[in-house]
Length: 133
Image (cartoon, rainbow, N blue to C red; front, side, top):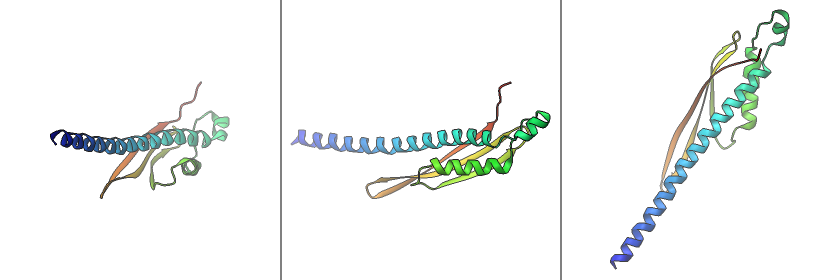
């Protein structure tokens, strides 16, 4: 009888450990996906918003603010996970020198039996457009 209680305890502990690992793996994957998506989308949108006319005229490297916001939202929406709600905040867009500050936040839900846990995942990024000389 004593050995059967130990077996029930070990099996229960194993199930709790598997649930714990699943929840944190899901959060880590979501955070990593959001960060990589934010980084790649920002870089591509900055390159798309590059103002070629001002570069040809006097050699200044600058981006167009409206074009950056439009390209960023379009690219982010194309690659984002459709099962989540994202909040995108564009804090600062400097046209010259080209610099942007962004924040993307989403909520991850985990179901552990009868309780639903929510985790807020926020990624912030400050990016500067670098060009080779």
